[in-house]
Length: 266
Image (tube, rainbow, N blue to C red; front, side):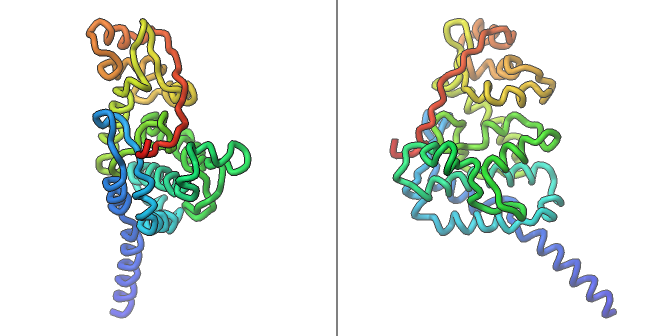
């Protein structure tokens, strides 16, 4: 009887430990719904950093919860749970990084490209070790064989106007696929950053920088042009232009990237 009670207690303790992290990311969702401002019909967004700064304590509570997740706990999750966790962590810690100097910066690049580089600065802990933003995106999310999903580039937000929008809710495992598809549609519908024009496709530098991710066979897609062809309805208005986009034979022109801070005050 005693051994049975001990075993039950250990099982309960294990269950509680694994249930400790909120997979709905409700705390992060609440902050995003409060402080993300949608623009251009929901195709882009801005962050109300002034308001977020006033909720800094709530943000730090969420960041602390992320940091408490152990490698063992994370390793026991399903892939969608892991990816949602990583994307939310990237976005939330990016916002925290901005708040360390806000309002005295006009771009995330103001932290520095060599010294103070915001993507290489180990300013937080994640999965049991000092971590960088590049450590989340480049070394973990984009690691070959981990997720192999180019849509993450429409979800991870670098606090810049040129970057795909910061979503107005957290990413969650049970809706992640739909959320990522919607992010792709939103970004490719934003004619300030992606468009059919003058017989060519003028698109974000993201498709140049991360071309490897868009040509690795996701959903059978092996070229950037083929990926863009799947989104012809977002990139062009006229049927004949959409047909050209779908054929995947258009010249690509990469637009300048706007590193200005995605501040709602703009």
